[in-house]
Length: 90
Image (cartoon, rainbow, N blue to C red; front, side):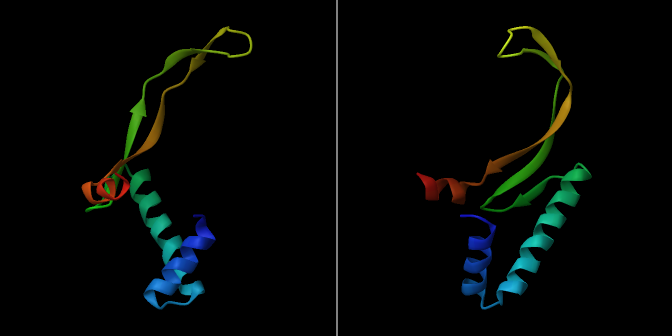
């Protein structure tokens, strides 16, 4: 499912127009992104939670040459699925 499929499904399920559903999804993305940028955790009970963690700097290898390269420290977003979501997949 891509974004346009999701917009269509939400519009159909909720009775919103596609334009309203698109605005709702865009607003959701902005709110979640903003919270994560501030370092906050976003928890959606039953669905899962998003959080930001830091990966330490490390040494990797260039796959073409085999030479060691330095990989800098960086922040990454992690998603941890909730129990309700996990039970749907099993």
